Length: 274
Image 1 (tube, rainbow, N blue to C red):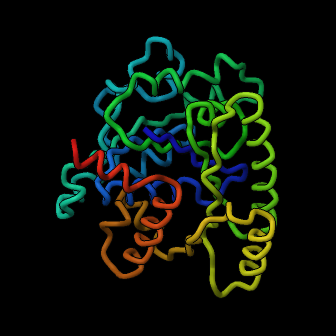
Image 2 (cartoon, rainbow, N blue to C red):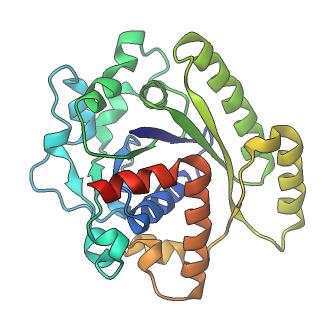
Image 3 (tube, one colour):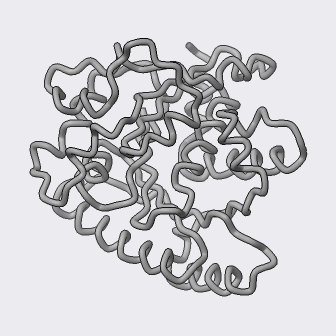
């Protein structure tokens, strides 16, 4: 089971949008996936079309991590019903550990080593998934540290803007320090440039700057700005099942991004054996 945290120091760069795009690509590819919504705003939960029927949110499960049963409280994404026309997705799974404001009690800078293990304990008792995507809050406080502790890889999201690039550089330094102190096996999945406007000279300049700063860690493709992305998310729909050529192009970008950050071929073969 690969566990990937999607992180950013700066808010508003489309971190949750990237999480949802990767979840959509995983569903279309038939990869059994769990999305853990660790952001207290719980936007990923909303965007995944979750219909809770009494399940406990991830924040309250973290409070009782020693005994909490995450597997008993996951909720199917509402996207699955729209995927029935895709043979690969027909038998696939896309589940959600629901976010809530309650998880904010752990989003503090002084979280201890034992508390950082809370999400790891919950995930250690979950089986049947090839991929776990963790949508982190836009900070380097306790919840993000929980996510990094539980993860194999961290994917950083940035916009091609001055403040976002500077924030990504700080996040890279923080990730290296965290790796040295707490998680020596944690890998950087890379950095994805999001909401890129090809007609913007500023964006072109910042993308070139990012290539110079981060080298091969800057993943391809960059994700272009999507004019109808708000409409897609507002409808709680998978981008792979939204009509129109722009959505099809966006889907292809996320398919390629998923291949960049995971061993998708191995996951698909495992899914097929199930």
